[in-house]
Length: 158
Image 1 (cartoon, rainbow, N blue to C red):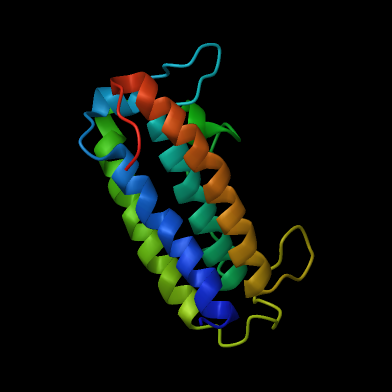
Image 2 (cartoon, helix red, strand yellow; image 1 turned 90 degrees about the vertical axis):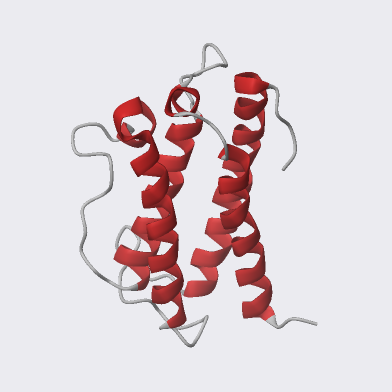
């Protein structure tokens, strides 16, 4: 039986590896489609959002490194809104880079309960809280991805 950290990391890894499976084989155009009106969600937008979330939590909060938010220079929802086919595949690659960096930064924290170097809105949080939040974030958005992918090309499941 896995201990607490192994359990949290296993669930997060399952979700991290599920997103690429769900968007595999799509063209840049398909990644950018917004197929569920009136929603403006796209598969690329959700991918960019999860990239931004990985970056924020594991760079700014876990490692305490001041870094600007990804994709949101002029629009707080730029991760969802400012998508385009010209950078779609690079945005997917960025997801993989951020996840790799997040894993490294989390490995540097030995105690799930210890306050992290960065803060969330001025409040201390620990790695346990970040892991639980990330699991929730992925679970919610992978549900969106399921619906979007089916609407784009009919593909369901993994």
